[in-house]
Length: 262
Image (cartoon, rainbow, N blue to C red; front, side):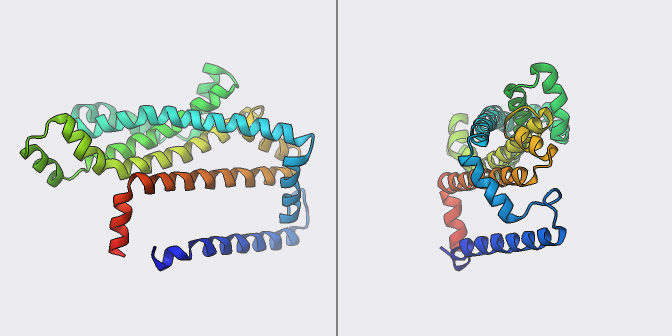
């Protein structure tokens, strides 16, 4: 482990302390809980989410619904996105056919998908899941496509010269070489799935975690809304760290090469 990596946790903790200090300073200047909740007010409401007989059931129900939508939408996006990205990167006909459509849909903001899904499935968990799928799948496709497309000819040509068939070429050369990009695509896809679910739920105002945040903000309960946002941030960080861990495990050879260069 490099010297820089050893200081990662202390640096992260330091940034949190600095952020809370600046937050408290602004809260003191504003001095109005209806405009900006302080860290102490937020911490109190954070605890209430787990112990209040009124808030706890709503919090746990909303959290469970949101997590299901995130993981289901992401899983569907991965199942569709990885093969489609591979086909586009490997076969020129698939590239020409799909590339304009993928880039067009990728450029559409997540909020634009909400009216479409509402017309199909109504204001249900399936609708939020569908939004998550739509905005995650194109990030995955583009990254997988880039990884497969950029596999070096210096890897492919020797394999063909030694008599590798197409299956061997794909499994032993192309997929391993494209794996770093695939993992990046999955990580970005998960982040966008979180965005999609929360945006959809906030617009529906009756579903999951996003609905709870919108309802609290609408009632000017800013300490509660801020506490919910903190929980959402913690979930996002945890999922991001999980994807980083999986990346290190799956692409261990790349991590080893990076450490050697250091």
